[in-house]
Amino acid sequence: MVHRKVTSRLGYCCLALLLCSTGMAAQQESSPGQRTRSDVDEIRKVSALLDTDVMNNTNEKVAGIEDLALSSEGAIRYAVLSHGGIAGVGAKYFAVPWEGLGVRYVNGKWVVNLDMTKEAVERAPTFQGDDYKDLMNPEWVARVHEYFKPRSTGQGQAAREPESQTSRALPMVLRATKIIGSTLKNSENMDLGKVEDLLLDRSYHLTYAIVGRGGVLGIGESYVPVPWPKLRLSYNRENTAITAVIDATKQQLEQAPLVKGNTYSTLLAPGFADQVDRYFGVTRPAPK
Image (cartoon, rainbow, N blue to C red; front, side, top):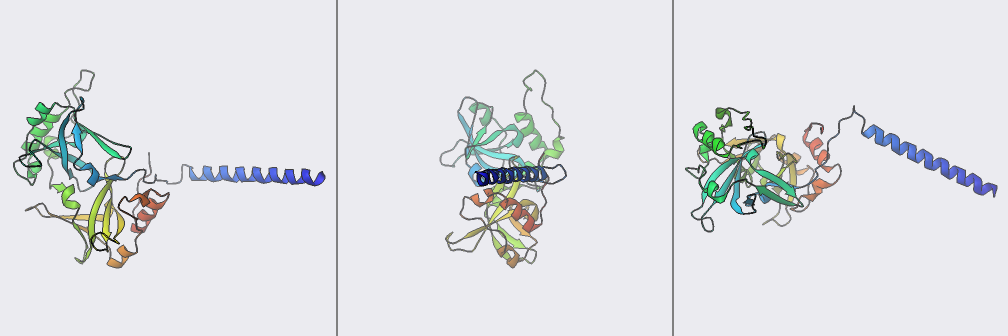
């Protein structure tokens, strides 16, 4: 009987020590002085966003997403939409400021909303060519923002326009469809692989470029998630072609953390995204 009481007391003491140490560890992890960063919570592929149907508030399809125009920092500035035509033939293309769209990622799918009738969409300013260089024209861009600007905030007040018309025009047209499929090279002009996809964070900024290397016809290919801040984009103004450049050797890229399969779900593993960032020497801001 005495032996059982002693054993029980020892068990309670061990349990108390365990709970205490666990609580202290949790407190240390969440202490204000430490920098923490949320792991990747979902795999938001740009490739999946392209060709997504754009619906209005009556659940009517009014357009489809064809491309994204990006800033060099990885922010989406404009969505290039299309409407009309048959199988892409005869379709018209136009740009909508990114903030003018309602974009959500729900249960692994993109949901895109534009609060306009189909007739209003058909009257939107269209591109004069297939290179989208109108986005570098301040006058054309001003027309676009005027056409798609919110008429009110819902409280009878005009929506605030924070940017000047000139600043909305792009210095160069960095198209998502040109980045995806581009060759990744280093500063010595050595081919390191191909950009297979781009991933967005929860704020819809580019966070990783997925680079494929090795394999034949996609078989046996492995994928390297490269933090977006590590890439530079070489832009050709004549044909808007893009080459992605990284300051790394072939060996360094071969030794980088890999993701398995083209779902890139390895990035969802706890701590893996941080491991990738550490390998490439990237420091992300702490979550707010």
